[in-house]
Image (cartoon, rainbow, N blue to C red; front, side):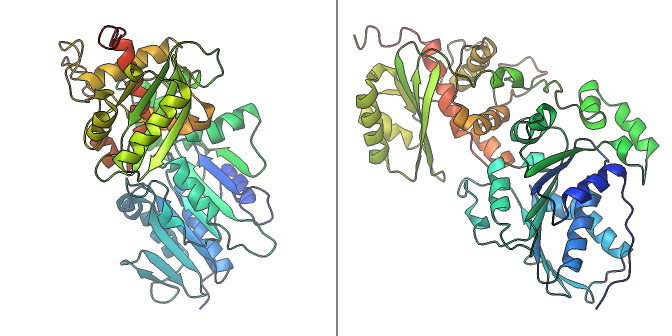
Length: 436
């Protein structure tokens, strides 16, 4: 059942994107956007519809961090375009709201999916059985790089003579998006299989909206520069603890000096990831991630690292909340209680908050050295740690791990393991007399 002929109008930036998305072009991952009302959602929805109609028996995916926002925002544009193209439910496609799939008359299929992680699926195993021809990820800054990589790895059901394709939309954001696309674009080091097309509101020449532009122009300077001008180097929000540029400078090689330390964020109920961090001075030498390990297995591994690297017992601290208390009992090491009394109880809500603010100070001073291998994950997790009530005059506190898991779908275990190193900066003489 053929659909009526529809001639799409593209602005200049959208035409560039369409060229990158053609089957013969070597680009496989395209990032489009960098500002509001730049035609990015329209482009992604139209491209997905056009691909399904042009190539029978193919499968595309449309994803957003939360399925609710996908339905309320992205798919509203999708159904609008279907109407403009004369496509009718029950004739040209069938929508299954229970399974979130669209079956097209020519055998093609569109899958609608949320891209949020969960403590029980940090590696996104649920994507493992997918076979895709292409995908469109809307507002990709909300997602983790691991989620995007997993979806991209599923594009193996290819067109003859073509390449698998992925289109992502965004507003400016720090973290993996900045490191993987924006900075290589600016530096001219983008690999051949990736591309970035910066697009702003002023580029949307097909349906300009001067009233909306004036409204965005009246926003505070930070949001105006980011959303209207596409400024990727915007100042961070007032609740930030870590400056992005300061964090980037932490990932470097440096002379090793100082004692050996070991910090550990132990898996709690409902979480399967234990993170162990080995330090020399303020240099993080390596991170070990243990999955679904029992208390005795975690204890054994810490003892092995302790013996291998000659880490003094007084220089080992692990999270004592939850099952971590068993590790503390077995090792007789220092137990870290997140909610325990801070050194400066008149200023900080608890020990965890004091350690995170101390970490922010150490990062700003350029004293912390972190491994490049985990750069994107560490930056992403540390960016999740925010000051609560930044405009208030109450004690300094930070967002809880449970709150972060609900908001982002992942637990900041790497960040917490790094934060615990600050215990020894706040207690420099701990154990001097007790342990000899």
